[in-house]
Image (cartoon, rainbow, N blue to C red; front, side, top):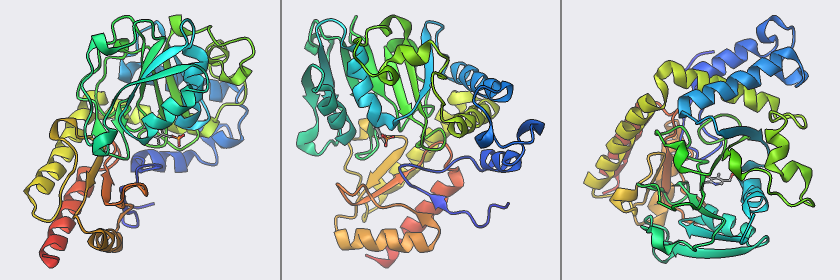
Length: 363
Ligand SMILES: *Cc1c(COP(=O)(O)O)cnc(C)c1O
């Protein structure tokens, strides 16, 4: 396999994976570790797969510096099923939760939680089409809320939290689907972190849940067994057949991150990649980034020309150059360059070169 037939894929998800990891997986595709089988064909109860899932968890704990009193779970159902599993498991006293609404995913999470209890939208940036992250103070949270939910990086609108809200004793829950492992975070500030794998970790089909142990054990008795976090915590994520291939791939990505120098090293590169792109957009007379500077995402860079026909021409012309999936989310249009961990600096450089050329040709 070589690199020359690959495109720079700016998709918001599923998205690029490190070429080195893909090549390693290809090598092991038909015969994993001398077992004579593919990971996909292997019993999840086998010794080989046992080592795969154990190493994946250990390496994730290491690169995220996850404290001992947190469980790491590998589950299915996407970020979307977490929108329901969170209220089912964390509504344990008042059945009230506070949600900060910073985009479509946050809105969906809040809507789902309403099926299970009282949801208070304590802040929202919807009035400006989610162009910023509201600043929320400790006094604003509902005193007896069971948890506070935030979407740490807003994939569609291109914002991210520049701070971790101080919720006092109320557990903070964060959707990190599109930013997990992109920058260092202090896990101990959160009650629960969740992330679908397909944006920054691996193939679709696995969801990572990192949950503080004292929050487990509150799912009601009539909750479906699979939806109780304890089911997964008590069984090492192997109550039923886990998504074995996805866990293997995620594990390979964790190893790769360790080799690169950990999340701190990725954060440094991610900041350089994002700064280059934002600096160019801000300096250009054709493109404009609608997001408030302090809240700009490191992962999803949203920009527009202000002319929908020109936006369309841009994404089509870019595609011809091997720069694919630059269209903005179908709900807002414009452009979006998702530059997750696996997007090399070279991809950003080539994108900027293309943007300059397009600008000079479309004045
Ligand atoms: C993509 C995404 C989701 C939804 O994930 P699915 O795996 O498709 O259910 C949820 N939250 C955020 C922030 C996302 O980017």
